[in-house]
Length: 316
Image (cartoon, rainbow, N blue to C red; front, side, top):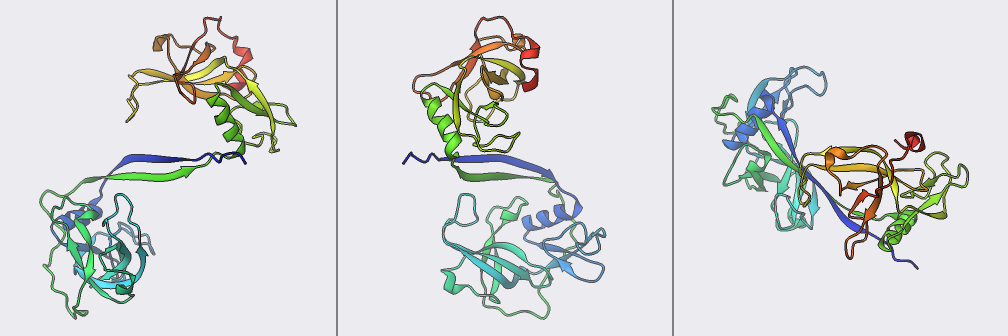
């Protein structure tokens, strides 16, 4: 049985956003250890606050303070915390309706185990030692022995702060495992042997590289393998001027679509061995491999005359 290929992959970027008056007040309040909600026309208090009523779509601006204690409405146990989560030991994800609020806030609960958590339990906020105006200013919730107060003790804050938070940067990250499947695995294994292999559609007879196991035009399965290249034609390209994180390539550099000889689909690759301002459509290129590389490091000019536009216009 052939080896099943798989690889761990990560997509990660900083997500930057500006804040309107409601979200600004909420996050600035957390910095000051104050929890603010927003009051709707019908008298409900929404925490976390939103700028529009989810029922009527009316603008909401009436900020009100709620307590730092509350009641768990539902929960789930996280037995294996992941990178970037609030706690590095097992904890419960909980929805907590803070005293004075009508909606629940999602956060972590520091508990000894799943048997120590139940719907209806009383909890309170554990504030972070250093706060900057972010949801992480709430380090987590912790069990609380007090009951539901008739009138929570509040500071009476009106949501007006000096030096309000106006924007946040939140890291976004997705960890996943990719398994390429039969057709793409054959293509990857052939690349390790410095060959480019596509698959031909039995209906339209086009050869697709990289193959996907089915013809994107006809929708029928493909299985006939066809070796293509190694040379090809640059069909279109872009000049990259922003250096990518963890990529040791000096900018500017060129990235383009390359139609390998015998293929009916262009693949992408980096173009080198030529000044970036001399790269052009129709340039004839060939792959350059590094020692031990499983795929071409880049493509360079072959020295052949440029391809005529009519020979590759359908692949642009």
